[in-house]
Every structure is written in C-alpha cells, then in structure tokens.
Length: 234
Image 1 (tube, rainbow, N blue to C red):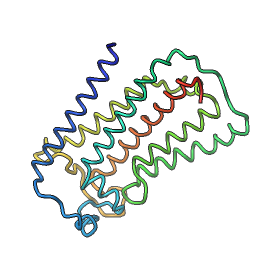
Image 2: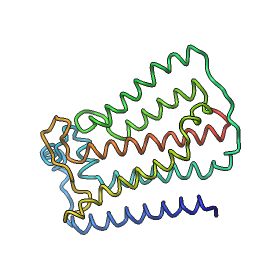
Image 3: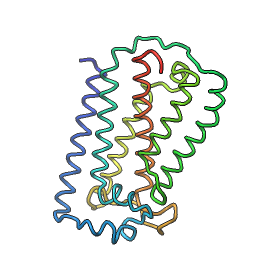
Image 4: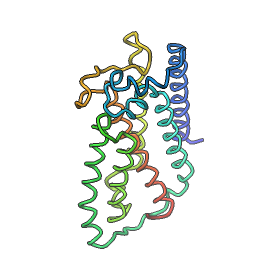
C-alpha cells in the first residue's frame, strides 16, 4: 500500500469514527424522538429559516445530512481510487469551436452566480449547498468541454483540490462538534437565529450551506476530472 493510499484510508477511518461519535452523543443527549408534526408547526420559529426544507435537513435532521456528505465523500474517494491507474494518460489539447467557447463564456459566470445565490440564500429561498455545488461543477464542466480538460487541469490541479476537499470535510465536522466546548450538545447552533427572512437568520444553516456547497463542488469536479483522465478527454 502506497503512502498516499494509507493516508486516504486513515482519513476515511477518522471521518467514520467522528460521525459515529457524533451519532452516539446526539442519541444520548436526545433520548426522546422528535414529533414529526413539530417540523411543520414550529419549523420557522425554532430554526429561523424561512425555507422549511433547509430548516429540517440542516437543523432537525442535521446528522442525516452529515451522513449524506460522508457517503458523497466516500464515493469521490472510490472513483479516484479505482481510476487512478489511468493517470499516465496524456490528455489531448482538444477544444471546441469559437461559437461554443463564446457561449460558455456567458454560461459559466451565470452558473457560478447561481451557485453563490443557492448557497448563501438557501435558508431563505429554494436552494442549498448540494444544489449549489452541482451547479458550480457544471459551470467548470462547460469550460472543460469548450477548452479541453488539459487546459483546466493546468489551472486547477486535481491533487491540490483533493486536499482542499478533505480539509472542508474536516472543517464541517469540527463545526458540528464545536458546541461541545460551550457545554452544548453536538450539532447545536453556534450562531443566533436572527429574524426569519433576513440573510443572517437560520443560525448555523448559512455556514452549513456554504461548506456543503464547496464540498460538493470540489467533489463533483474531482469525479469529472477522474473520468476525463480515464477516457483521455471528455
């Protein structure tokens, strides 16, 4: 086993242990099941999020969302691990026509702008970190199709992005565990609720949306880059 594989396996084991500990602490601190009717009756009042869906999956069911992020992280690791044997393939300098490149120059900024809107305002209006991350990765996919993956990798080194993606996951885990230092149960809000409908409302939901958006964006792009490397181009 190479040193890189060992570090990846070790990081995955640490994340699994962290999530298991969070689940145990949440179960011990909340022994009584939550009445599902409260999700609708007191959602905005208790979470501060005008988007009731965001209030549920980033507050009441935050542990479930954290597990979904973990599953996504394992999927990214799996794709990169099983396709790494094709890293020696030299990508061609393929690029599309000028018409496609011009269209992409308009579409990509719009995709990134929509990504930022979904991540920042996901607790107020429809959106969220998962959708934001996929949209941003799609924006980079447009650029890769228009100019070629070789040109993209020259600017966005996959190995460097992989380290950043792992770091974001650790930051997310640290953020959900941070309330313990204040004598609270894990996954509790660190930020005040604010007034529903305003940007600084929803407690920690805004932070979660931004972190998840960045995590999904980098993870999705790494998967796209791995498949492009495996095929020799998009």
